[in-house]
Length: 305
Image 1 (cartoon, rainbow, N blue to C red):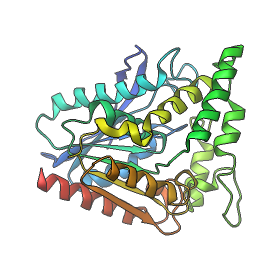
Image 2 (cartoon, helix red, strand yellow; image 1 turned 180 degrees about the vertical axis):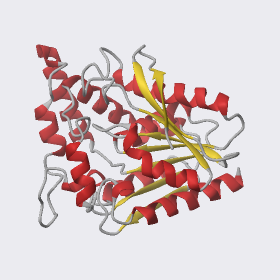
Image 3 (spheres, helix red, strand yellow; image 1 turned 60 degrees about the vertical axis):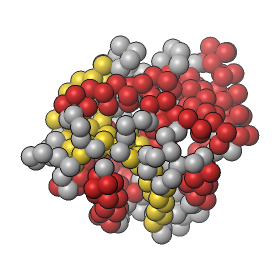
């Protein structure tokens, strides 16, 4: 059962923090980093599955997300992406004090996977492992164009206004390739009940501001292969995604990320693609399989640690 508290961002804003403690002494700690236009409460089922396997889970709701956000889809006036990364680190340090010496993992989904990948360039040392859910590979032209468009809107006074042109460029085609599309968010999961829950949630599915898009694509520009040299080569990485996830280019982008990590010298990179799976594998029709595979990977790394 989750315990909800508050957590102070490095910007000074108050954020929501969730802790799912395992019974007794945990095997380790897994810190969730959620995705774009959602919140940490959506990870309750996954966290409880990890609890049952002996892991304590912790996470927070990002700046610009959830009911505590002054403006949905807006990070900060400056260095917004860095604030997301440093909030993850602050929560890790805080949690470490309560669970000293425990194996410690980061798990980022979608935008959260990009935050975690950026985090690994600065603060990866000491982690037992990193899991990336629903990650993707954005080409330089797309990143450059999106960042330029968002920056132009910001320069014209629209930093805090919805970045609809960038949204259209980056995600408008996500429903292509599926049969019987019924909602704008069918690309999230084949489980229609889960899509309906997302649609009904007032803190899901909102449009990012131009400022947040500028910050996010700036963050993505830091993940080019030549910039990965600061990663800790001994921290294992587990990538998992659906092979029909548009964010991961139906598996191709996830494979490319995995290869770039290997090329950067990361010694232990595991990739798991689920046939027919879409973007949110924790909310897919085969989620129990996804949980089991993740737990098996965590157990393997915990045992080695």
